Amino acid sequence: MNGVNGGRVRRATAADVGALAALRRAWVEEEAGPIADGGAFEREVAQWYTAEAGRRVTWIATVGGEPVGMLNLVEFHRMPRPGRRHSSWGYISNVFVLAAHRSGGIGRELLDAAIGIARERGYARLVLSPSERAKPLYARAGFGAADELMLMPLDE
Image (cartoon, rainbow, N blue to C red; front, top):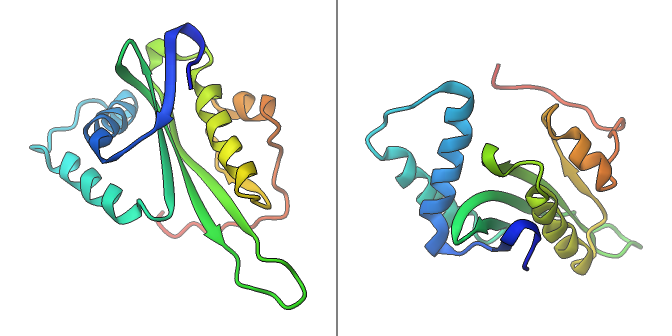
């Protein structure tokens, strides 16, 4: 999908694992500073990608051939229920665009790609957990507050 500012959004493949790892590293280091790990992180991303490929669709955004953003969509299938058609839903995660490319429409292109697949697949809903910075993007795309959900943090 050709986009704004010469950008391009496409589904990532195993060949993009290095670029996805670099984007994820840039995201974390933007907030926490440089992290030295001897390349262990890149190997972990490759293992994660392989393990998740069956239930997750990942998109990558490029500008001038360089990776500048990404988004993941995880598919969940509801347990069948008598008298009701099968349904699925999606969880959008790991949405990130390099700082130099923000506010130019790339985040929206990534989001539109995920929304398009969700509609094609007939998902009942899309869910995400936005950062404060990203809430306006999601609101413009039609997302609203999810007051019915409850959360129990387990890793704090």
